[in-house]
Length: 242
Length: 147
Image 1 (cartoon, rainbow over the protein chains, first blue to last red):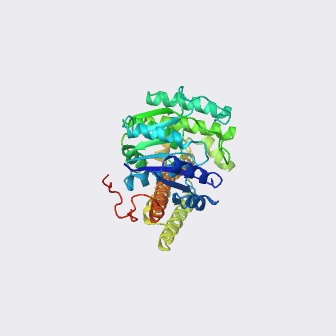
Image 2 (image 1 turned 180 degrees about the vertical axis):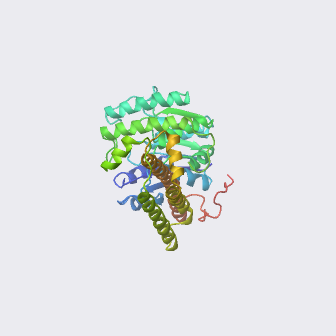
Image 3 (image 1 turned 90 degrees about the vertical axis):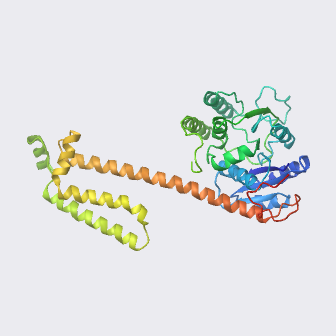
């Protein structure tokens, strides 16, 4: 059983080394890949120094393309399972282990770490506190995604996931470049894969800041709803081109 | 312009003047020559030039056979042939713009995949530091290693 943990990173030199070290300590058997999404800072060098294999995209392509790179690498290199987490330190690797356990036990094909799930562990002061615009966006996406998939999702934009080879081959060919998280969930459910949420703890980010300003959030939400709507009418088993 | 307006008020239909027709024909010919020149100088690929030639030929046909345009105007229920002409050109430009968006999307997807392939090649070049120790993972690429 080979497992790949990959970390999409864009200008995360401040936090990526700590995340890699944490993953290596928590999951010594797993290989660690950092997908460097065209960073202009020292992210790639820092990640390499910290002992990760680095896949450098030549220019910034967006989170979706970076995640797809990870899935493609995992598929090509013959990994049985893969997981990904954010480079900013919000996702404790100990929680990733729990997600991986679900796919390893073959209880699901794709497992999402949810920070809002009812069963989420007790909170403490350094735990993740969502902002207001984030809260609004979350509930809008939750509503529409539930409507689209007829399955209840609480944390639609979570970037902490674990997957098996079925998901790798689906996502390495079909993955929305700019609406990675939500559309991929819709796609996986439509293709008949078993998608499951597991409650996890998330921390406040260690470095950098969120890209979401209120105006951007509104646009993000609008775009997400359009994407979900279009996704409902997408042909099943779409080809390599999207 | 005032004579044109008067003409529109008095007669039910407005035809293209021969002056307009000659101008349009000359422009169409110049336009197609420009397309040929761009192809000759490798500034435009043949597969993207077809649509422009069709546009140029359409322009020429409209200038040579004004009856064609008047027929279209009639079908559209427009009294002024000039208005019909503008509408057709506008629709054509819309179609072209959409065509470009489709081509652009396809090329964006291709560029993304190219970037990903390159990133993966680079990643493979660094031997996995601690796993399996076979050092040359590229050899069994896309093959699932027996576990």
